[in-house]
Length: 231
Image 1 (cartoon, rainbow, N blue to C red):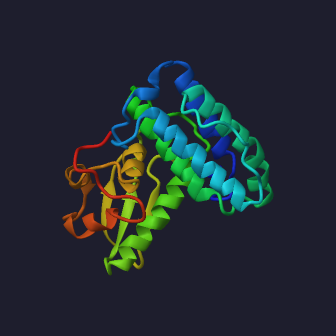
Image 2: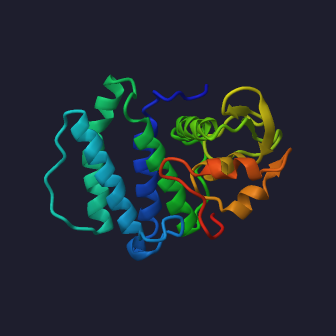
């Protein structure tokens, strides 16, 4: 069954996935995360904790009062403390108000995995709802630039990364009939929409029309294509 934007199981899944990833790699806190070139692993964790605390406060919760340690084990425990309060609040709200936070957290889990040489997770609860958030933002970017719609397609008969849709699934971004189709594996489509693919990488995807009219639309919200090829 396809997950919806109101599926709240993705947030604890991200926390558990990142904890397991870093448990196997002690001492990784100072590693640079190439997708977030100004951040180390510890910096990225601090970002995730801070976002969770702000969302918790918005729902009326109180973040735990802790010291300012940036050690990875401390940050992981602090994030779990936030999540223990936030998970039921999101569930009571039907997931409303938390889907962007889940997308951000899952996107950064993929960033960490790429930085540490770990494969994308299989069957992840955050994949489908996060992808829908990205398609929605990309659609607004296309429409806001007055561009025709573009179809996103996952090739049939290929393995998918993460939760992923069924092979061959399609989405239309923008308004009206699609004037082009871009076909790529689910992981690459996700990373492209989340600002993790350079202009050269975007251009190299399988397009049925010249991609140049749509390249600017990949800059939206907090995302924009990096100068160097992403992973």
